[in-house]
Image 1 (cartoon, rainbow, N blue to C red):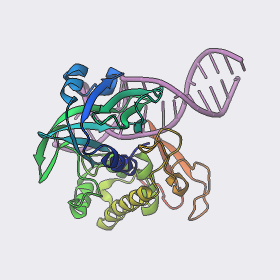
Image 2 (image 1 turned 120 degrees about the vertical axis):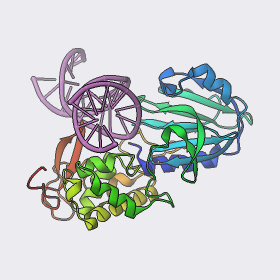
Image 3 (image 1 turned 90 degrees about the horizontal axis):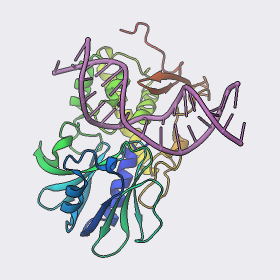
Length: 287
DNA sequence: CTTCAAACCTGTGGGC
DNA sequence: TGCCCACAGGTTTGAA
């Protein structure tokens, strides 16, 4: 599933293949893909024709193609969204949702999305805390790879929350970019059970788990991201290979790489939490 | 204000 | 073989 490292791989691919090009024509093949564009498909395609892509940018799991006049194509990959470059005329993918052709008639950009949780929208860029970003995501916190990310403040905010530590890690307003996979990996590295109450974490524990999240995402980025199946690929259709480096996620009943204890899986927020019951003991009292 | 859970989706795979 | 259900999960929305 695309979390920060996977989205960053895609962003870099878009920067390399799309920046500097002028859009000739956009086709929306499935209206749900632009459901967050309130003015509808005709407005979306009409306003994009002739626009020039200046750069590909990202915050957390959101990415956007910056256009001129403080506008941008804002994208979220959801669970299965892909941005792939294809030669014009290549056969349509089964789940092709949006096609972007360019004036130079070079490779076209395709938004492909099986589960349709992702989508595109036109957004106005606004000034926020020294950054230019889509107004609709101004509520998202900075991610750990942002040069202006403030880890001391993030730990402080984390410890004022009254919730479980994993819920806090997944809260994009606190720190953005972390999803279920890297949350579990960070908690394993920090030796913290997912249900530990945030208000009881020490400053050192808070710092440790946020540093672990930052490190594991940086390592995943260097590996090209995590792929379990064909649902995450870069703009050239290639998978990342960080899955082999995961220590807990998806490893239920397999031995912990630190202590050999079988990894546990528990239901959590309509998904799963993977953890080592020995390295990450459950808190004695759930608040 | 904060916290929480349901809803949105489709393809895959296990059980029977 | 085929049917049914569980599962994958990020964000939005509305309720408490």
